[in-house]
Amino acid sequence: MPRHHYSNRAILILENPWGLDDGDCNRTSVLPFVEGIAKLAGDTEVFHANFYDKRSFDRALEILCSARFNNAVIYIAAHGNKGKVGGVKLEDILFAIGDHSKNTNITGIMLGSCFAGTDTDTIEVFMQGTNVKWCVGYSSSCDWLPATMIDCSIMASMLELDEEELSDRATMIELLAQALAPFSRTYVIGEDTDDNTMTMEESIRVVMQPSGRGNRARHVTDEVLEEHEKLQEFA
Image 1 (cartoon, rainbow, N blue to C red):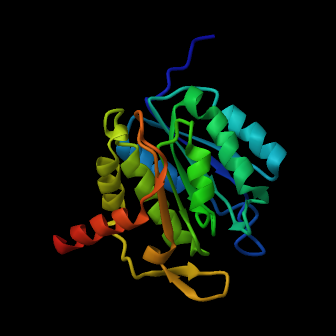
Image 2 (cartoon, rainbow, N blue to C red; image 1 turned 45 degrees about the vertical axis):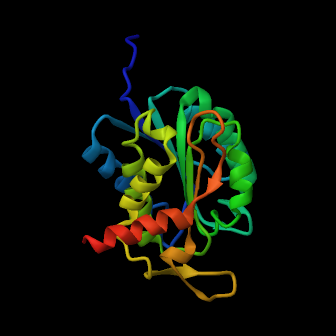
C-alpha cells in the first residue's frame, strides 16, 4: 500500500461524550471547531477519538500517537471534576501523554475540562522530563462554547511556534497572551467549587517548560495576563 504523507503539524483530540442535554446523543463535539482552525492554519492534521474510561483513553492515545509530527498538540475535551477528567484520573492522563510525548513530538496540552488546571504543582511535576513545553487548563467550571473558543484560539496560536521559539519562554508567553487577547479577562466563565463566579483571568492556568538545558516547568499565568493587559492598550 502507498505510504500516507502527513502534514507537519497535528491536533490530537481525545474527547469524552458531553451529554449537554438529555437528547445530546453524542451530538456535541469540539471536532468541527478544531477542524476549522486547522483549515485556517493549513498544514495541520486533525485526529479524533472518543474515550469512556482509562482503558479506552490509553488505547485511543496509543492510536493517535502512532505518527510523528514537527509540532503536535493534545486536546483533552471532557467534563472534569475532583481530579478526574472524563472519569479518568488527571494524573493518569498527564503521565500517559508524557510517555508518548517524545516519539510523537507533543509540544503542548490543552485541557478543555472543568477544574483540570487547578493543581499546577502536579502539572509541573508531570512535565519534567517530557517533550511537553506548555499546558493550559481551567481552575473552575467553564461554559462550554466560550471555553471551546478560547481553547481553539490557544491551540491555533501555539501551533505556530517553531523549534527555536519553543525554547524561549518570553516568546511562548507573548504568543499565548496574543491568543487570549480577543477575550475579556473579566468575562465570567464559570464557578469555583463553592459556586462563586470565576472570571477568565481567575480561572485560566498556564504552565510552561521551554526546551533547553536548565529550563524547568513553571506556573506562568501571571506573566501571560500581564502581556494580555499590554495588548489591550493597543486594541
